[in-house]
Length: 264
Image 1 (cartoon, rainbow, N blue to C red):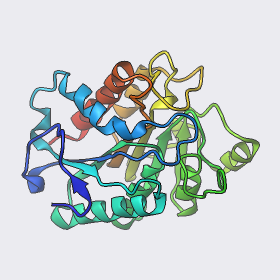
Image 2: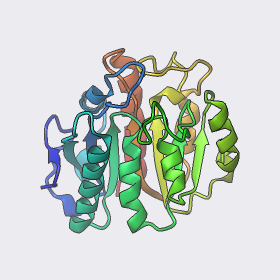
Image 3: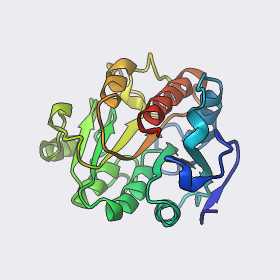
């Protein structure tokens, strides 16, 4: 149905998009990962973990659009495909909320660009061990290390929660970025981005760039249970090539929490 997707290993066989409240898109892309690649295998691994859990009739209102057919090694074209596909979604339905399963964190940019057209007052709340605020990384402006800088440059308010590693450049730039969840007005259209390395490695060992002293799952889950005007979301940076079961199971729990929140 969509421009750049293939429907494999779905969490829902529902084909009634217009009655669905959620559209799932896998984005198997990890071409800018500079430590341990393998995030491209996460969308299907998260689906497998989701299907192993008790979800009742949660999938009745979910349309799983499958995976974006990414352009390996080409971040710009992959993000363009993702942006076009989400815009295509809104040609079919104005109400379904897109949720991405990454893939590396760069994929957030494609979704946010598409959602900005629908929600001019969109804001982004990113849970991440890293600021991702570099101007460029290894001479690349489109990277998992620069994604929140690119989003902020679009004039979109960005909040970063859980960051505990960054360069001096990023710490300096972060002075212009909200880092306090109490300052977020969740009545505004909000895009939630969860980088799995926000969690302490004890809870999520299967990530490419782990950082000690991270958040506990219950802390993030408590925030997700707030009343949020959710415009879209992603769960990114799980790496099943490192560890598949604990990390992807937690990612699936996060997905369930988000889906329960917006199910109608």
